[in-house]
Amino acid sequence: MRIHLIFKIFFLLIFINGCTSNNNYNDENLNIDTDDFSDSLIVEDNLNNQRVSPYSFIALGDSYTIGEGVNEDERWPNQFVDVAYENGVDFDQPMIIAETGWKTYDLLNAINQTNFTKKYDYISLLIGVNNQFNSRPIDEFEEDLNKLMDEMKRIKKNDGNIIIISIPDWGYTPFGQSNDMSDISEKINLFNSSLRKFASTNDLKYVDVTEISRRAINEPNLITNDNLHPSGIMYLEWAKKIYNIWID
Image (cartoon, rainbow, N blue to C red; front, side, top):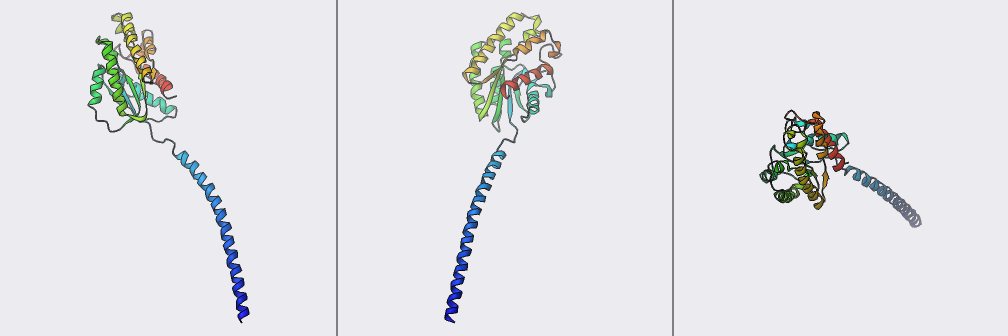
């Protein structure tokens, strides 16, 4: 009986050792499979981390940004969002801080009085025509631009993007024809030179819509019924050019 018991214990130990070896082998295979699966998860996670929420956009300016004389959906910021969407880039509808007649310091006051609840991915600035129209000094304009830069930095995200847009030339409108067109253009060019320098100094993109505006003298459909402000047709051209320079 004792010998028989010894043999039973011996074979039991062999069986247990074999099971243990098999388990170790399976654990190794399981580790390999888990690593492969982890790699797949990492790849999938990277894909899921691609941006899915729309970009935020705020447009700062005057009558050219609020779209004096056109419907809301014809304003250039609204049409810009549409152009971006058609090209596969999704934006929220723009927030607009702009009013007809605003000069740089009017815009500054409005920004300071606004309670911003978030920061923005994209910010545009189109301002200065009323400084020129009201014969405000160019150095005042440039000082206000620096103040506006501080405000834009405050409301943009850390990786946010700012674009500066040139002042259109109202001398090439029917309204402008009753004034000295060459004098208006000369002064608009002076203000735009400051804007271009401002953009370069602050490493910002700059888009020239002035040349588009000067076509209005020969293309009346580019102007609204007030004979001064751009039509939705002109704003669409701006929106496309701004998109190509800013986003594309």
